[in-house]
Image (tube, rainbow, N blue to C red; front, side, top):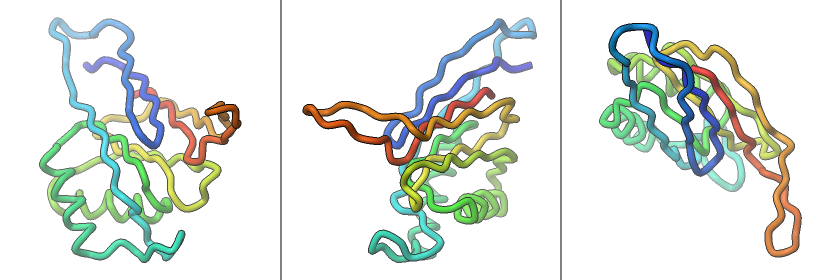
Length: 148
């Protein structure tokens, strides 16, 4: 059995809080990674072109070297771009069976999650604001909260 984890993802960081006791006699461990895929777009947006096949191959190579069980992703394009990455990784031997995509105020770049374990619940925080130097800003890519 595995521990349940709660993950909050922003465009810059993935944090994990583990809760509950292990169901087996020995605690299982799993790895968590975070990766900024730098404009993984499947259509031109924000004065950026579609990510080239060479660049997508480099992203997959890096993700395969990380071999994380759960991967938080920043700067992901559309749900189709996430599905393409997930499918390409599976064809290359790294099977993330589960995925999640968080839509935020920014309509082109998002945060996402790939996981080898089921995502038991997901909560998106897409209307958060913060104060910086006396100005209020909206979080553009949202936050994803996941229970694994």
